Image (tube, rainbow, N blue to C red; front, side, top):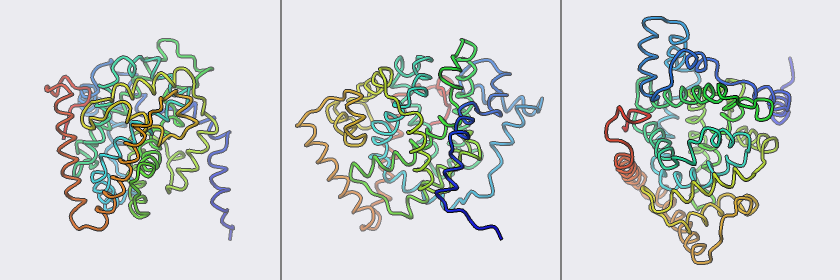
Length: 367
């Protein structure tokens, strides 16, 4: 019998520099094959074309649809539903953690951040992109959202194809692969999932909302399936939150390099969020919450301002989250009430800030 290697040695091999370097030159063959055959358009329209051509032509279109419609045997729908309820109940604080902590930390990976600068999408239309990110998570969190045919499943199909079209667009315009590696590669895609899972959980905890271990386990499983749907390859899927944290540490060791582009992107996002629904928080408070989540080293690299008044407000917000978390776990029905409120608040913000006509949205559904 072969002795089982200690977990840390397995991870050390799985995320060795040799493997991770290869991942930086691996993208998403299924989605890229489709992108090569379609013209750039709204992601919702492109997915309509994919479905039509999958039936008429098969080939790359059918392969993409079949992959997206095939649920891996390891998916546990009870865990997915468990996580969905938890994420919706904590959607307020989690949304802030995602925006001022997770996504902002992602800009410290300078090669990945350069994709956003090169496309011009983020700093030219930051609020639209933020609301579209909210649209994806909102659609994923409705009942049955990630089931085949559900609104979240459809939106993820649209997002995944959009990323493939970004790769196509950049490479057609002379993307410097030798300097920046492949755009939106497997290592970058894995870090995006880390932003939605581990870094969001860490940000929530630093702002006073700590989930139980069972809830964290369910949330990790939820985002593991989300990673699969988004095109993260089997080699980069993590089996536990602990492994995901190790993966995060390895990517950070390899790619952490906040620069002027990183600083610009971070400040643009926080400035754009100020006073906007659904959070309606002032810029000073957002800066302090970002500092609370990121830590002083990265906050200083981003040149986020300090303000004693807003620091006190951030501490008060942290206390409120501690009380809300206590209520969630100790008062029957509190989580359900919070989930209902968060769903309605998200729906209102998206409906008011995205085009009313579904055909004019990048992603069609607002569930």
